Length: 363
Image 1 (cartoon, helix red, strand yellow):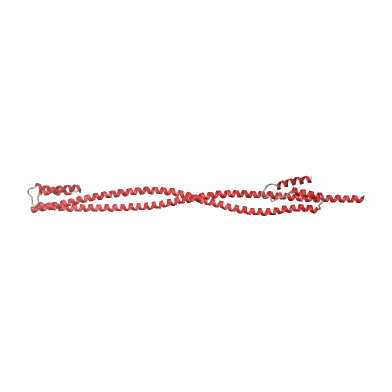
Image 2 (image 1 turned 90 degrees about the vertical axis):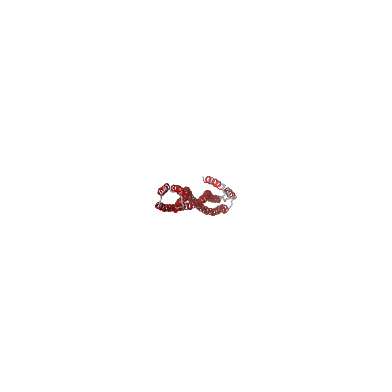
C-alpha cells in the first residue's frame, strides 16, 4: 500500500516539475532518473551510503534551487513594490494635475463668457456715447451758425440805427432828405423781424412815418426822434449783449457736456482695452489648461495601463513562485519517503541475511 502511495506521489511531483514555466529552475533533474538510479544500486547491492548519497545530492540540488529562487523572488518583490509605489505616485500626480487643470479650465471658460458679455455691453455703451457726442457736436455747430447769423442781424440793426441817426442829423442841418429816412426805415423794419425786436422798433418807425407825412416839423420833434433812436440803439446793444452772453453760456454748457462725454468715452476705451487684454489672457489660459489637461489625461491612462500590467505580472511572479516552491516541497517529501523506504529495505535484507546465517549455523 505504501508503495502505491509512493508511485502516485512520484507521478504528481514529476508532473509538477515538468510544468513549463520560466521560473522552473530544474533543468536535467528528474525524480524518475533518481528512482531508476536508486533501483539499479539496490539491484547491484551497492552500499546504503551510496544509495543515500544519490538522494542527498538530489535534496541538495532542490534546496540550492529553492535558495536561488528565493533570492530572485525577493528581488522581484522589491521591484514590484518599487514599481507599484512609482506608478501609484504617477497616477495620483496625473489625477491631481487633471483635476486642477480642469477646474482652472472651467474658471477660464466661465470668465471668458462673462468678459465677452461685458465687452458687448461696453461696445453698446461706446456706440451710444459716440452717437450722443455726434448729436451734441451737430447741435453746437448749428447753434454756432445760428449765432453767427443772428449776430450779423444785430449788427445790421445797429448799423441801420446809426445810419438813421446820421440821416436825421443831416435833416436837422438842412442837407438830409426824408426819402433816405423812408429807405432806412424799411431796412430797420426788416432787421427788427430778423432779431425779433419789432416791438422795440415800432415807436421809432411810427415817428419816421409821422415825420415823412408832416410838412411842418420843428427841432423839438427831430430831437425827440433822435432820442428815440439813441434809446433804441441802447436797447438793441443790451439785447445783443444778452444774446451773446446766452450763447457763451450755451458754449460753456456744450464744452462741459463734450468734456463729460469725452471722459465717458475715454473710460469706455480704457475698459475695452482691459477687457480685450483679459480676453486674450483667458484665451491663452483656456489653451494652456486644455493642453495640460490633455497631457495629464494621457499620462493617467498610460501609467494606469502600465500599473495594471505590472500588477498582473507581479501576480504571475507570485503564482509561479508559489507553484515552484510547492513542487520542490513535494520533491523533498518524496526524497524523504524514498530514504525511509531504502533504509527499511536494507533493514529487511540484513534481517533476512541474519536469519539465513542462523539457519546455516543450526544445520
